[in-house]
Length: 116
Image 1 (tube, rainbow, N blue to C red):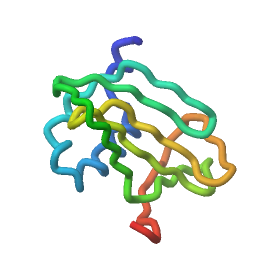
Image 2: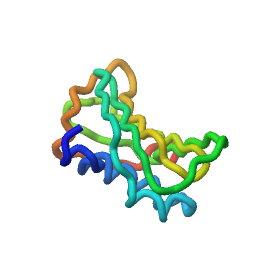
Image 3: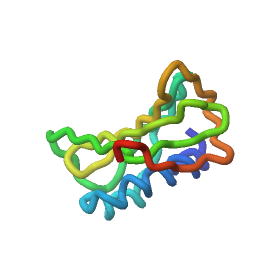
Image 4: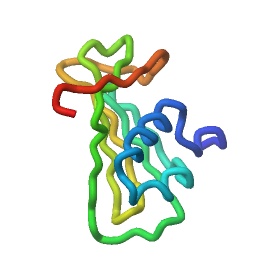
């Protein structure tokens, strides 16, 4: 992976920052993340991380509690951060409905969902 891809991109960083707002135990780890792999699936993406926090066997997931709005995804998007203990492992971003996503995120925004 080339050097500029070793860090979360603007879109991933904004999602991580929103998740961290409500998750105290992630606050010290999110800034030290390094991207090890990024995969776009056509309906979302997976971004794998490594960080300096020791992993544990406990699998946790933290959902993004707002809707992601991107102009080319009419139904919106969601995200979940998968962790091993307090170590973030993977950011999963996904579309809702039958929408597809090509990985572009120009003009993205967050919107409170009805169940947030």
